[in-house]
Amino acid sequence: MQKKLLTVQDISCIGQCSLTVAMPIISSYGIETCILPSAILSTHTGGFKGKFTFRDLTDDFPEIIRHWTENAIRFDALYTGYIGNAKQFEYINIIKNTLMAEGAPIIIDPAMGDNGRLYTGFDLEFAGKMAEYVSGSDYALPNITEAAFMLGAEFKTEYDEDYILSICRGMRDIGAKNTILTGVSFEPELLGIAAYNGETDTVEYRFEKRIPVNMHGTGDIFASAFAGALLGGRTAVDAASEAAVFVGRSIINTLDQPDHFYGANFESVIANKDKH
Ligand code: PXL
Image (cartoon, rainbow, N blue to C red; front, side, top):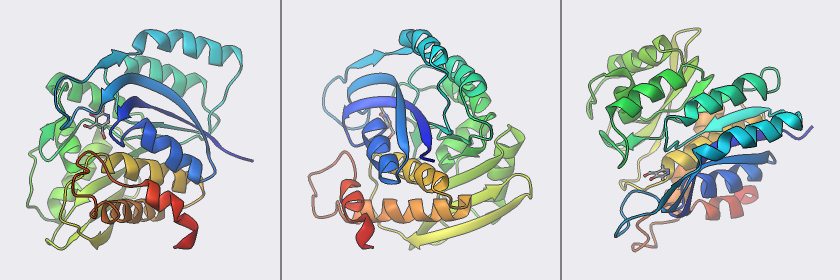
């Protein structure tokens, strides 16, 4: 039977991130993709000129949940990304506890920062609330910045496997069952993920050739492809590895558009998916 996933994150009208990434990518895996928009922004918060608009949709959450409950809606997975208001965690926890099918995986991308910094609009208090919220995840998908902020750990750009293991164990200790840590690199030419299984306390690494550019929205592309591949039946490690390849191709396909500063051309990867 076709699976039905609910994703909660913002609509950035322009910016190739969050819902405009999640919906097409997850749908391309054949998954019915239901949405709960957390906010509507004119653009994402990173790098456009002037003041972006931000309409918080928290007040709509209780009525939306009420109506879904009335219709006995059940989701086969939950994937949450950028949440612009910590009040929404309470509502999402209600969805988690009442509207999920038995065994539905909870995938949480604590999208709130990168490169050692929180995105505009977030602070340490929010990071603390995200840490509490992430305790309900089967799969947490932080980058090293987000994990360090949630754990109150030192953010390092140069590190060894012991540091990565300590971050992963920290994630387990705050309640994440499994963690896929993104943006892991032990040598300059390679970039990849650490897939940590909290039950067995083991890490598996997957690396790709690093493309030395920083692009917005790649975390969202990764998380969306991961969710699609996982629900498609891949193991977590294989889903993460496939998602990393998806991100790499999206970046490569953007390199011929040097003026395209705000996101990555993931659409080309969907368009060519069957050809690889
Ligand atoms: O890609 C993460 C993201 C999602 N949503 C909004 C953002 C960002 C990153 O900056 O600003 C609104």
